[in-house]
Length: 552
Image: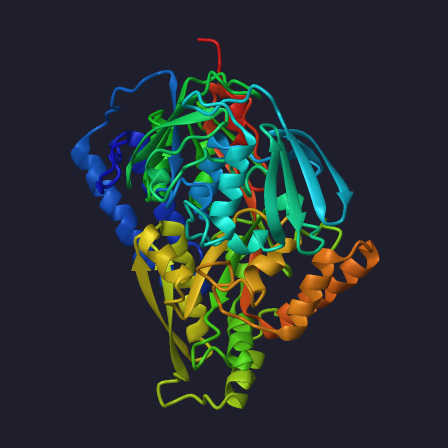
C-alpha cells in the first residue's frame, strides 16, 4: 500500500459552464438576505479564486479509466481498520470491505451475514453458526478463530492484538467467547444485552483475520464485496470488486474514492464528467444547476444523519447549562435550513429518527429566541460590556467548505446575543483527533449511522463511554441517565424500555451536552452512465454493490 500526504490531484477546469456557475453562486450570495451577509466575503473569495483558476487553466479533462467509478469524498478515511475507524468515510468504505456476523434489511430487521443462523438458548448466551466457504480477500477461509480475535482485540486491552477503539464499550456485556468448532461461536454475557446483535452487524462491526494487529489499517483484508488496493492519504482510496464475495459480486470493476475537500470543485468535476458520484458533499445551492445537466441525475431521500453541536462539559464556561441553553436559543435553525441547506433538512429534537418506536417530541424545545438567550446569559452572570460582548468561546471545525460556512453562520448568530465565537479550522484528521481527545470548547459533526437504534444514547452519553474509548466526547455524566440506559439495554419489556428512552431524551434535552440541529436529507448526484444508484437514509455507499455502467 502507498501512503503519502499530498493534497487532492483534482483541479478545477476552465469550462464555460464553470464561469457561469460561479457567477450564479455569487448571485446567490448577494440575494441571501442581510441575516446571512456575514457569509459574503467567505463565498466571494472562494468563488473568485476558482474563477481565476478557471480562466487560467482552460477547459480540459484528464484521461481516466472508463471502467473505474470515481466517487468524490470530502476527506480521507481516518482508519480503514473497522475496529477503529468511526468517522463517516471510514465507516462507509469499511461497509464495502467487511462483513459482520449479521446484517439488517431496509426495515432494520436482522438477517444472516457471516453467520448463516444463530440462536439464543437463554438471555446470557448467543450461539452463531458461521457460513461455510467464506474467504477473506487474501484467500484465507473464515473460521471461528477470526471472530474471537476480532471481538477480543476490541473489548480487552490484555488480549493479543488489542487495538485502541472507541467501540470497546459496545461489547462490555460480553463475559467470554468460545469456539466450539471451526464454524460455531458462543458468546457468554455478563448480563442481558438488547443491543448485542446490532453491535455485531455489518457497519457496526467488521470481522478481520486472526492475527490482525495495529498496522492492519495499512492493508485491510475483509470478506466484503470489494477489496482494498491502495490508499494515498488526502488523495484517494482504490477498491476493486471481490470475485470471492460470498454475497454479491459487484458489476463495477473498481471504485476510486477521490478526496476533494472543496465543494465547488467537486460540483464541477461531476459536471464535466471527471467524476461519477458524490453523496452529501456538494453545496446545496449547486443542486438545481447540476440536476439540469443532461449527463447527471440526482437521487434524494429523507435522511437519518444528524448535524449537531458538541459542548465540552469539562470547560469552566460550558459546564454551566444556562450557557449551553443560551447558545441553542441564539441559533436560527429554520433560517439555516432554508438558506444553507436549501430546505433539504428537518429540525431535530432527538438523536433518534422521528419514525423510531422510542422517539419522543415531549422534550424541551429550543426555538430561535435571542431574548431568552440574553436572559439566560444574564442569569449566568455574563452581562454585556460596552462593545456588547458577554463572553468569548472557540469553535473548532474541519477544513471542508460546508463545515466552515456553518461555523460562520453560527458565529454571526451568536454575536447577536453577545457571544464572541472564534473559529479555528483544521485538516479533517487533526480536527477529528482533537474532538476525540476532548481538545475543544465547541465543535460540530454529524452522526452518520447508528442513531437508528437507541443504543446511540449509551455510546454518546453514558458515563462509561468517555472518549477516546467511547463516543461521549463531551464527557457528560448523569447518574440517572446511566440507570435508565442500563435498564433499557437489559429489559425485555418493550413498554418499560420506551419509558426509559423517553425520560432519557428529556434529560438530554434539558442538560444539553449536545444540541441536535437537523436531520440532513441524503442527496446523491451521479453520472447517468452509472445506473442502479439509490439514496439511503444513512447516506451509505451500499448502492455500489449493485450499481453498473449503462450500455455504451
